[in-house]
Picture (cartoon, rainbow, N blue to C red):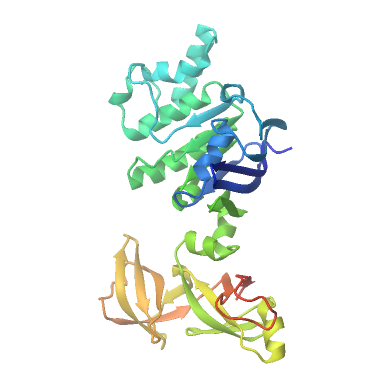
Length: 373
C-alpha cells in the first residue's frame, strides 16, 4: 500500500484548470518532489494534499484512508501532516524550543522536553533552544521549521519551496542535510520546487509538472538521461537539440557525426522502408561533447561561464548551430578561438522533428526516439 496516493486529481479556480488529472504514488519512507516552472500547479497540488484546498475531482489517500474527494475533505489538522514553509513561519516571540514544542499540544512536559532536545540534536542545533528566531541564520531557522514539523511525528511532511530564500551555496548544503534528517527519521515527504538541483539533491522520485499535468514521474537519473518528451528534456538539465537524419534502422546522422544505435530507431520503420526522410532532433548535453585537441572537428568559442572546476562553453558549429560543452577549467580558451571537440554519448535521446509530416501518419506529434550509442 502506498503511503500517499493521488488518483486523477483535478482542481480549478473558476474556469481556470490548475491541476488536471494528476495521479502518482509515494511509498513509505520515500522523498518525492514536484518540480516545474511557476504556475504549473505544483503548489496548488501540495495545498490539496495538505487539505488547504478542496479538490474538484479525483481522490487523495493517505495511508490507505480517503482524505479528499469532490465534496469531502478531511480537515488539515486531522491529516497528521507536517508543513515546512518557504518563509519559515516561526513565532518571533517564542524561543527555538518553544517553536519546536508548539505542535505537541497536551503532551506531558517531560515528554515534550525530551522530544525538543532530541530534535535540536537531529537538526544540528543542540544547546540553542533558548535563543529566539532572529538570533539564528536563515539556514538555522529553516532547520527549526523542519524540527517543528517533525515534532508531533506526522505521517507525511510537505515542503513548499523551503530553500528559495537562501543563497545558492547554503541552499545546496541544506538540501542534503534535510534529506539526511528525513531519512534518519524514516519520514515520507513531498517537496515542491522549481529548482532542479534541489530536486536532484533531495528526492528519490520526481514528478515534472507543466500546465497542471505530470509530464514524467521518474528517478532523477531517468529524467536526465531518458526524458519522456521535449518539455522534460528542455526543463531538466542543460542541453540543445541538434538536427539529425535517420539513415538506417540503427544509425542517425548529425553534424558532429553518426550515432550508432543498439536499439531500433522507431521512426526508421515508418520512413526508411518507404524511402522517405526521417528528421529527428537529437538532445546533446554539455557532457556529451568532449574537448579534444587531437580532434579535426572544430567549433568556435562564443561564450564561456567559469564555474570553478569547470567551464561551460557555448560553441558555434560550422552550420551556425550552437552547442554546449563542459570542460575542465584548466582548458581556458578565448572567445573566438576554435577548439577540437568530439562526441562521447552514453545516452542519446531524439525526437521526431515536430514540423514535418511522416509516412507513418504521426504528423507533428512529438514521439520520443531513445537509443544508446
